Image 1 (cartoon, rainbow, N blue to C red):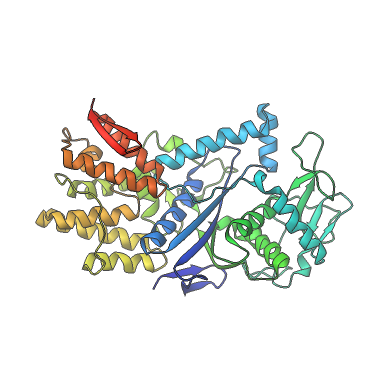
Image 2 (cartoon, rainbow, N blue to C red; image 1 turned 180 degrees about the vertical axis):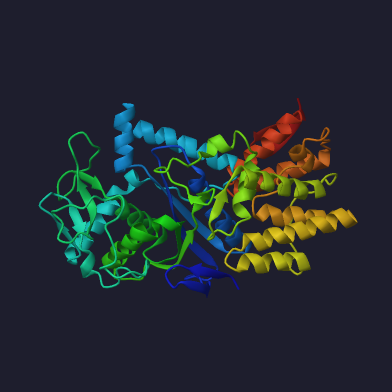
Length: 454
């Protein structure tokens, strides 16, 4: 049985979905005012891995990952660059999609933008006010009355007296309590704004995710994820808003990925030691970066150094070297196989990717000893669940020409079709480009995909 470390319970728990065979998962995505850095990549890859394993385990998954496209930082950056907010966010959403595709991320089932859900946010705020949990201050903002929600602090494990106002929120003297947080901000004349019963304004950061998740997944769903830095205040505030408005439990399992560190120091923009994904990809193959992130457990700190990335490249090279000379594609896995069973046991133990990667190396050793096509195919299939070893080994290793027979071309076409059905457009595009580089042109039509030599 799958066991997940639940940040709310502070322990691993057996995963029991609310609806048998179905998983509804929400992950806090990117605030799009700049390019994605390695910390963003770690979060995106962690939950890409989670949803991949849930699907591989037979669950019907609805995966929602939002985009915050209205925020103080966005407004400030748009003013600095002299462009409309919509132009700024559109530019960085495109950049985010480029980085995600390069790293082999599958698209979420829904990718809502905050600005598309303002009516739902206003509805939730009104419900909170009706229940006495929200009030309009003399400044015109609408705030959440933290001390009126009995369960506040249980996710962070702190008492109200220990907690502080959120990092993104300046303490407003008009608040009844410094811990109260803003739900609706009175807009300044030059800012984006929407009409409301409390006057023109824009949503606070926290209410966005409560409204979007409840709208797309229901008021009570299975998994909510995000970076460890969001546990407080963002996720704490989401619980207060959502449960305060609905009177129901909000989320059963809370998951948080660990921080990225640089030379054992926390990575942050304030320290100036952050690395953009696109800059790293200029120096390292995207699959090397993916492997570097996934071979660490998602909850553990991830230390970024050139040495660690070089080690990841060498390790991934060993896996690809084992597949050299094999023309095999991923296929259905026999989970009774010893290695497959070990892989499943690792992944079912709170998505233990280090343990799963260790199984891949054991399999690679078997392939090197036996040159068994069956073992090579299993290695390719298990690694594929993690989004690894998707290329022909010769392409990764860059050794000699790769021969594409009719059978291997058709296998790649079938794999591309499967990737498109799974909404894994990055993988589908990679396969098309691989064939194009070998002089094989794909043509999609009403009757399916055909191919020809260039």
